[in-house]
Image: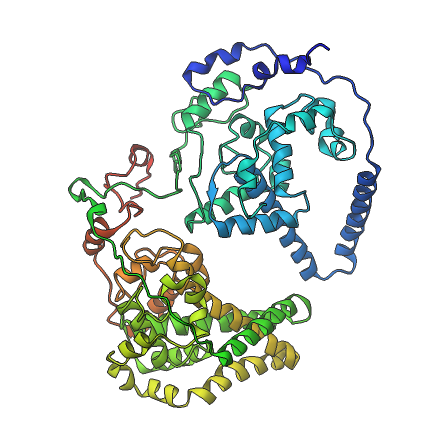
Length: 622
């Protein structure tokens, strides 16, 4: 039997390698005249029926969107769509099919769940089909061969049996990387890019399939934004991308002439002043790892690391706390459900406001004011912060501060109430569910809390906390929604949802912000810089800076995602907050060069890591 002519020319036509100047011969390759051999398509009627039914139901669903469905149901459907698409595009496609970046276990688990929502096979089956598509593109071994027509490559390939070459060639693929993961055991088209979260820049993707961006530019590419977001919190890393020079060479050699301008200086560029440039190869987006300037060369690897390990201990469960916090989570989840079904919009918005008040009482009050004395406050602000902290239902301020000062003074030891060395669950919520280590009590008794007991506002709260927290944190937020006609139960459960979210947001500072992220200020402690935590905890996620400079009222070097800082500055404007303590740039610089992990951003104009493009293309106003 004669060999398949498709196999004979396969390598010539595919051109799947990366390109550089030595690859200019490719533009002399003959145009592919490869056509698939004729075959009789064998219909799989089960798939035809299932697909037809799903389309009919979907059409009726679109009708209900405009006829009787609640807008909350429609929003939930859109959310499911986005989750499913993200699982497919960032997970099955860019992570597992092309290994364009790496992901930690939590992100892989999230992507697997999102991909399951998409209802598009298992990840392994999806990747097998897609790798075949790339490796044997436009041959009989391509599962959705474009040479068989638009309808076939769109959906027809799912409605008939696979070509024998698809099965035979598929068996030769190496899928060992997928089976080793326990979580698992072409034309540019803006329309497609919009509806598939960035997968429509397909000509670029087939040219550089290992580029995690799957596009040269950042247009209509939600998947790219989400991957970059996870990269900022340390869940995605080793992001591979093609250099601008490589892209330029490939477009010149094999493009059809439709490429946009390259950037500043291109002959097609309009005579307008430059605004910005982004031409760096991103191993970690927006992170520069060099030393600060020439005189700051320090071998930080020679700094000894803390080798202390906590001793194994027997955990004595406090069942009262387990039951109480278990009920909070159950009622809170039910409250979230009610916020999308029967609760009034005003009630949901009120719950969000109470969330912000409670969070500010914790972050601006118990934490920055009373734990670290990072600023001073007049009695009206102290009283307001005490009320807000009571709303958060996180012990009295005096108890909260005692535990937090222990955490800083004895970080990562047995005297740390939520010691990160005991695992992420323990420092998130587990430490509340069991009796404290004896060292916590012994060392805690040595702390000086006289500044707290001298404040009559805190003495009152601490003395009457048991009934005061019930009234301020539970009853009042639950009955206020009655003023606009809400039911009592909806008000109660929405407040439970608020409390559930607020508690977990605070706890992420103890857990996520000690496990995931960068350590630009002190690599020898467990605390990290985590944007996600800073977002949900209104500014407390820049935790590596905070542990390096706990007395800085900003709790961060920069003003990013720091709503607490905004609140404090607002009260400072009216004179209620004063003596705001902060750290000089020189002190920060010295600490970074001495103990940082090299991930600190550039300092500003004149830093040795600043690129020539930044100097050349910056716009200096006035």
